[in-house]
Amino acid sequence: MTTDEEMELDSLEGVGPVTKQKLHEAGIYSIMDLAARGVGEVADSINGDTAKASELINKARTKLSDLGVLAKDFVSARELFQKRQSIERVSTGSKNLDTLLGGGVETGAVTEFYGEFGSGKSQICHTLAVMVQESKEKGGLSAGALYVDTEGTFRPERIAEIAEARGTDPGKVLDNIIVAKAYNSAHQELIVREVGRQIERTKLKLVVVDSAVAHYRAEFLGRGTLAERQQRLNRFMHMLVRDAEVYGVVVVVTNQVQSSPDFFFGDPTRATGGHVVAHTSTYRLYLRKASKSRIARMVDSPYHPEGEAVFVINSKGVDDPSEDSPRKRSGS
Ligand SMILES: Nc1ncnc2c1ncn2[C@@H]1O[C@H](COP(=O)(O)OP(=O)(O)OP(=O)(O)O)[C@@H](O)[C@H]1O
Ligand SMILES: [Mg+2]
Image 1 (tube, protein in one colour):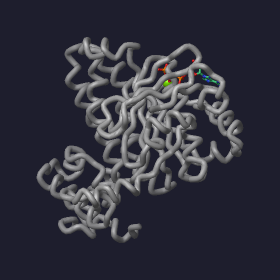
Image 2 (cartoon, helix red, strand yellow):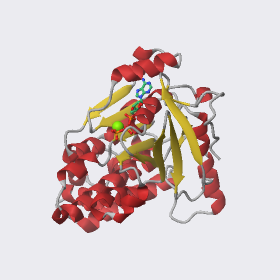
Image 3 (tube, helix red, strand yellow):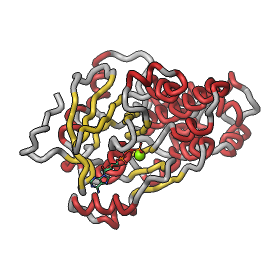
Image 4 (cartoon, helix red, strand yellow):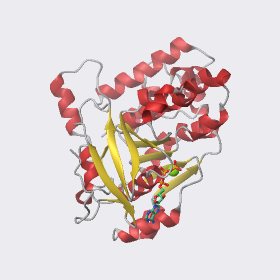
């Protein structure tokens, strides 16, 4: 573990009182904050000096890798292997889905759930916000969640139902979920810039953005604005990737797409959000409806086995199909 002093901005060479003050004004309070920001953002806070901004970010990242928080630029495969051993996982509530994910959603990574309306994306998010609070033996990390709700679909009563059905105190579970409603894409970005502070304050371990893409899709409609949308969404996704990495939290995002993923690649106006998210998320799962159950498929993962998992949605949130169900298929 690191100490607060080690995280002070002025413990970095090149950060004097003036720079420190300017960074504070931009909401950057610690070395972790600095390491999690983009060059453009840091440059904006220090009179547009891009060279100094990248130098400061690099120093912050080097310090974090010296402290063992971040991976170094050059590491042995053994070190990487050991680092991966320290990754923790949160259960989705379904053993099938967990198996597909290699044990659950990972800390330090961004996992994207995409699929058409009603495919279970928000239900997975609600269930994870409960599961992360469970003890390790029960698939959680005994920590809270931050839920960024961009579509107005977060339902506290659903959280209470899931908690109750899983035998946990709904009141406590609700207490440990911070909900941030994002009204537009700029607001959504502002909220995510505050994520680091929230994590440091409350030690939460799960950040949900449901949906990551909806505002961008709604605000940038014409073809003329496509490049800008792509750029903004890209920057947003990178913020999340850095937060996941620097703070070691689980980040889960959702993305609504048309029912056929092939169609998705054929139409550039629809594909934009999808492509950007695809290239920045660590893991992507495609969800589809299959009568009463749902099927998840891991897409393009470098190390997960190919396969599908069947899950259902019930009072426990995400769950496995009952044993006698003929549709049961294990996630391998
Ligand atoms: N308490 C419940 N019990 C059983 N099923 C439920 C319950 N609550 C929701 N569902 C199921 O979950 C579905 C909605 O899933 P969800 O809201 O996760 O979809 P989504 O993928 O987020 O869709 P969208 O793209 O519209 O946001 C409902 O159609 C219903 O079938
Ligand atoms: Mg939803």
